[in-house]
Amino acid sequence: MSQFLWVEDFEESHSVKPYTDFVFGELLQDIDSKQRPTNKEEMRLLLEKRGVFLELTFADGLEFIYDDENLRKVDYIILDVRLAIEESADEDYKHLSDILKYYEKEEEPRTELKMVAGYQLYIELIINLGFPKEHILLCSNHANHLQSLADAFDKARMRLPKIPTKEETDKAYVRKWVKEQHENPYSVLRRGIINGCQYIQSLLKDQQEAVIQFGEFFKTDNHSQPISVPDMLDYLESLQNILPLREPKHPLRLYKLFVRSLAHEWDAAKPHLLGRNQDGQLQAFGWIMKNVRNWAAHKNLFENLTEKEVVFLFLINMRTMFQLENAETKPFEKALLSLFSHPLSQDEMSALINNKSLNLAKSYSSLKRKVQNDKDDAVTFVGMLNNLVNRDKISQGEISHRLFQMFWHGLSRAKVNNVTTSTGRQGGIENAGIWYTFQIHDYGVAHPNSFIFQLARHIYSESQLGR
Image (cartoon, rainbow, N blue to C red; front, side, top):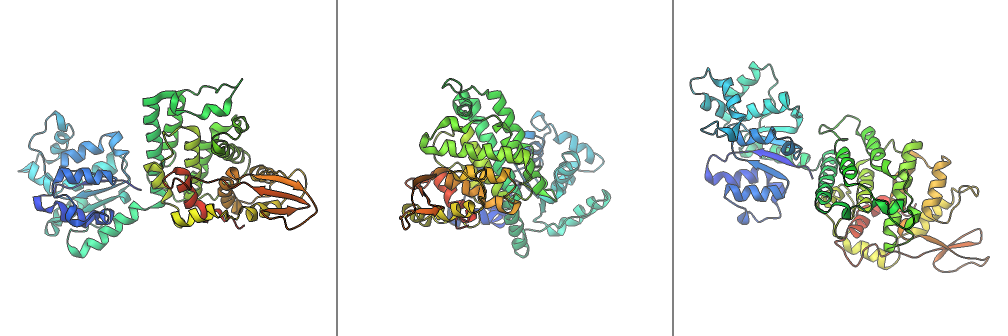
């Protein structure tokens, strides 16, 4: 989900809980109101776990935004207008003394700054740091003092944005703004990619080469080719910089660029070297990325990718190139999977897997019907799909659900059972006398918190396995 910086000083000690509820109540619905902290520092810790970074003074907010690493953590910013001003401009607050110079002509510089402190942060963000103004919400608890803020905008020849108060009449507006930004698909995608890359970077810095399993796809003489940690760190850093903070008018173009960059490293990879080890998952995911790399480089299939396809490819790519400690779904993976709006429940997914009713025969048959000659044909779904793509028989509109189908068929591969002219053999489908059967993978059904099971239930509706 999107992450926020909130600069709020809670002028009155009893305002911590009600002000937090006013702004971020939607994010805290799972916590009983009586259990929410009334202490500033405890509230700060709670909010940070929900992706909200709380700063309690003007100077702390100023230092936060001028720290590149900190500012990179947030997608949206909420600023109280009146904020406490530290009494001293010492070395801990190196930017505060510079700001106070703007107010030297005032009779009481700190008092004047306090009245419009949020405005000053706003100016620093959009003028000096290039932060999108559409990603900032100014909020005030002092409606009768907003004239000074209006005057400040007027002097700067800037349009005054809507500034809701903390009155009950504006509560719905503030919460709606927070909810929309928190769930914005582009921002959720971008934040999930950044958090995922940074998580893996931290593993690489700690555990070094042990995290990298990408070398399995470059074996020579039964030995994995070493992949350097610096190269992987650079790769992850580059992925974080492709999607800008401000959502472009045409994000689909960037999604295509992102997928090309994501899959570029798979150019010389050889998934067939892995065989069917590790229950086939590593090889299956490797074939998806290898084919996506080739299609992205040589075909115009990825002009209409949505956030969902990008999430799918990013997640399986990270799980294939890197060893992520255990099978449990990571926080960044959960956040990205939230972009799938119609996941099956865990019980629904378990029933389909246990009853072997995933419609694999139908999706396999639908692709097989496109085969017109031996050059198109193959036993495996992925091989057949690649042949058809290379012969321009798969459209841009079709590639989306075919990508997801590669997940199911890569793990539950088709096999030629026998050649016969008889009919009615249970568990297979007939194609010119050749029968194909599928050994259904368990897709992590025994471990509902595993990544593979969570991925399966989230993408099932998008896969359209009946087509």
